[in-house]
Structures are given as structure tokens and as C-alpha cells.
Length: 216
Image 1: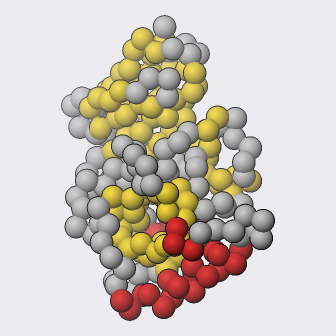
Image 2: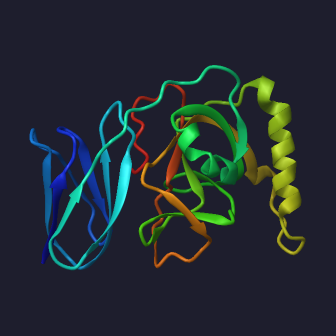
Image 3: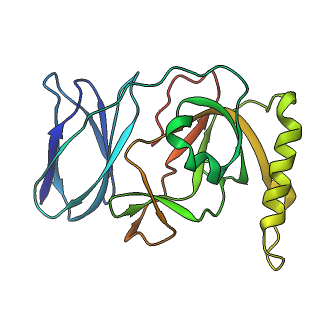
């Protein structure tokens, strides 16, 4: 059996996802450890209020050591919220992080509701690929001032679908909230990752939501 040890800011929540899923808090000295792990790929995430949630991919084939440095959250920008497709939101994920936005995509229900779209670029962390999906948490309705532009984006998405596989118009929706994405992601041509995860790499939260963790 193997282990992952490392350091993160004191008090940070560190989550491990993969062949096993577990969590812990970094101690006063920042140290954390996960032991008795089987061989395989894992996603390691660290989060702390006031800082951006950060992920790393770790391939466990013996004991591993991982350090985390978290970046402070940016101030909330003033002015109208941008209206973007799922793919456009991912392309702008760093500048858009923790900002209000309207995102348009294909709604998918389930245990974790998401907005999805087939994007030419896939987000990856190391050799792990993420789905082109945004998780949804406690959202409100889209303000009336944005509805006309949302409809334009809807029509663009509907028109882009192949004739042999048209989209159901009622499933293409625009949703308003605070866009939060993970740090530690890069873009790569879709879809060539060695390993795939099902966790969405970003989440759209209701504007009054206080728990802004992406991985849940």
C-alpha cells in the first residue's frame, strides 16, 4: 500500500478522489497525509475560504509528496454579467473565476445537475481529463435584462447541432450565478487524456451561496 503526504496552508481542506475518496484538514504546520492507498490515478484538491480551490493529479505507485500553494480570490467585478456558452466560460475561466455570469448550455439532470456542451478543447490536470460540464448549485432565475442575449446564444447552440442529432430546444438553457472554476487546469485538444474523471471542473452558484467548493 502507498501514501500521499504533503503541505498546504494551515487549516485547508484537502480532498482525495480516485480509487478511494477521503478528506482531511491540513494541520497547524500545513501537513496532511493519506495512507493505505491502492495504485492508480488520484485527484487531490485543496480549499480554504478566501482562496481559490486548487487541484493536482497524482499517480500513486509508491509514496508521493505534494505541496499546495493557494491564490487569493479576486474582487467581484462591477457591471453587467457576461453571457457565455459553456465552452466560452471555460476559455475565460481564470478571468471569470468567482464573478457573476450567465452561462448557456445543455441542461442535464441527475445527482449533480450540470450544463454541458461538446467543446473542441478539454480541460486537463496532468493526465486526467475533465468533462465539459459545469455543476449547478442553488441558482436563481436569469434577470430579465439578459433574456434577449441568452436567446441568441441558445439559437447558436441549437443551430450548431448536426441534423441527424438535433438538440431538444427545452434542454438548451441559460442560467445565472457566480462562476467558480478550479485552479490547476490547462487546455488540450479533446479528447486525448489517459484518464477521465466525472467531476465537473467548474460550478455555477446562486449569488447568495457561501460554500463555493467545486468538487463535492
